[in-house]
Amino acid sequence: MPGYVGRFAPSPTGPLHAGSLVAALASWLDARAHGGTWLVRIEDVDTPRCVPGADTLILQQLATCGLVSDGPVLWQSQRSDVYRQARDRLLARHLSYPCACSRKDIAAALANTHKPRHGELVYPGTCRPERGGLRGRPARAWRFLIEAGQAPVQWTDRRLGAQQQDVAAEVGDFVLQRADGLWAYQLAVVVDDAAQGITHVVRGADLADNTPRQMLLQAALGLPTPVYLHTPLVLAADGQKLSKQTGAAALDLSDPLAALNQAAQMLGLPPAEGTPLAALAAWTAAWASGMGPAHLKLGPSNAPT
Ligand SMILES: [Zn+2]
Image 1 (cartoon, rainbow, N blue to C red):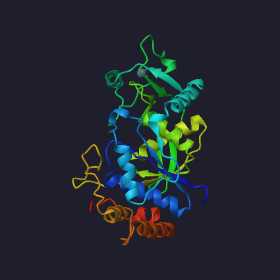
Image 2 (image 1 turned 90 degrees about the horizontal axis):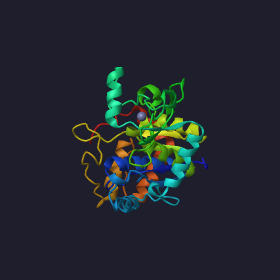
Image 3 (image 1 turned 135 degrees about the vertical axis):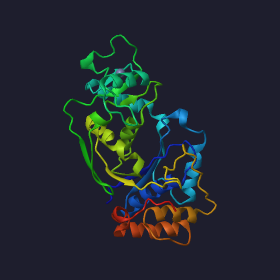
Image 4 (image 1 turned 30 degrees about the vertical axis):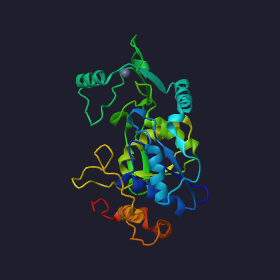
């Protein structure tokens, strides 16, 4: 598939960990197995959470594993103007509006309406234009307006199969620009996937439930929707998701092949020997022969090793 463009988009909140290497390897193998291009994007849009120097370190770690971007690396922190243009396009189409609500306001509004609560607060639409907008209060954030009658978003993940989410009911109008002025992850990802010509997104399953929001944004901005594959998560021994936030140890890359083999095992690929590049070539062949996503559907691949 010569038109294939994939990507790996780490947040530089720390060095790569075992889980992020799985996503990096899967996205690289899928691109190579399709004869496509693989790009790296540094998702440093949430600047307060970023660790200075982590971006350089991540790129070095990837290179140590033989994973090098086929094109220029994109830094989201340099793209505020592009995100603003996208937000303004939505504004012009009445698909974005300012919101004055604090987290406390939202919680209070939800308590009054007895709406079901998930881990994340469902925005109750307090500042929607038809409800009077800001009503004199100062704007804090900008939200995406989910149009009335919006059907649940349906999509097919290459590993997880048919998926569905009623974004209006489960998330509500979501933030495009945060109260601190920073651009929201959802908007930056959608704008950048389109700017980089991404056709296939391969990323960790923890991001799967972002996909419907991103698809709504793609439709609203007239951008194409990539094909999605969400890879299994590496769980810590206690069953918790491994992440920088939960203190996942940085990868030990003194033996890159060992780290790669561990990631490959999570993807249902056989052990490989030799140099990292030889291992990558062997796994690319295995992935192309169907051992990748098809195999993942069946495998009990979430067990910690
Ligand atoms: Zn509001």
